[in-house]
Image 1 (cartoon, helix red, strand yellow):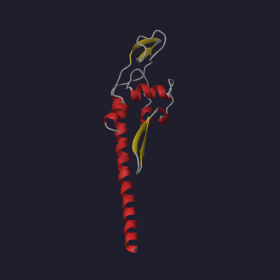
Image 2 (cartoon, helix red, strand yellow):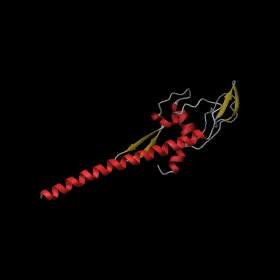
Image 3 (cartoon, one colour):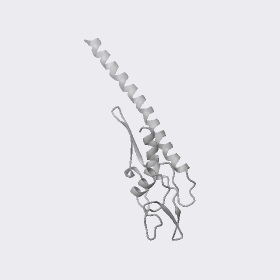
Image 4 (cartoon, one colour):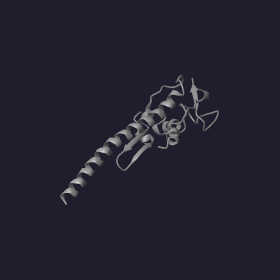
Length: 141
């Protein structure tokens, strides 16, 4: 009986050690995937019309434990404050891939599509890059 209990305890210790090691690797890889998705978005445009605050790097939360591995996304994880609000920036950029821009306003040339303004006038349609959200979905996370 003691041998069976010792074997059970040894297996539990080994399993816990393997889970901790494996979970650490999974978390590292999920962090890398999320960071690369945001990198792809930021690198798709050289910002000459807006100040890049890089708040999208905090647009997700990674959970890794023995029961769950996930990347949850949302504006609630963002730490940067924006004039337009975190939710707008998250939706416009993280989910849809737009590099800034306003979707409405007086005399907006294309309501619903982000446009930049310069010197009080509508300047041009905002640039669009890869959506970090879609890149993560395509990667299966």
